[in-house]
Length: 261
Ligand code: PEP
Ligand code: MN
Image (cartoon, rainbow, N blue to C red):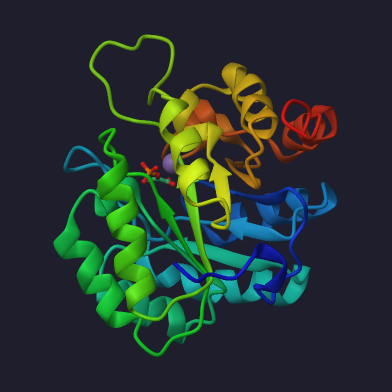
């Protein structure tokens, strides 16, 4: 696959790449306060879920399109870029219309080739970075297949996100990291940026530092971490979100590229 390195993505990319922000956009005030806090910690790319793929029905499924004016306001006020999850061509269309800078494909979508192909078809002729989370199941070929579908649609700014794998009996992690899978990925595709998402692997705040450090020790290219100005009041993934100040402390404590360099 011919892809661009992070430095050529046309974004102000840090090394390692840091993407942080709330699991979900909730209100204009929540987004503003969270982004304000993150910018103080040096974050330049904000993640924010607008449509949420929830496991069970009748739970909060994202605020949807009303989030876009709030996102636009935050972009202008704080001069940040935004990454949003897309799970259908309609999501892609709305995200592009609303000036979103990066797209990501969630773990449940990556597991479904029909969904990935629909998204890929909707991206033809579009130049935007797309990050592809590993599928929820530990299937490296399925993850690679999703990357290939997006690449064949003409997207060349492609990254992979390791967010761990569903399990039945791992009481420690929410999603087992199974590090051998991203390690194998990195060996086979050394030029595709690999980003670790410790938030969805850990499921709880206390574990995040060690997983984030492990990822950097393994030469990952970046981190995507959930952050909320008031995590305990979050509408989704409350236990794993960090206050922006705590994210700042974490970032300051991480040692970059220790083991294999
Ligand atoms: C998310 O990023 O909030 C999310 C739903 O993640 P995943 O697709 O990894 O479960
Ligand atoms: Mn989440």
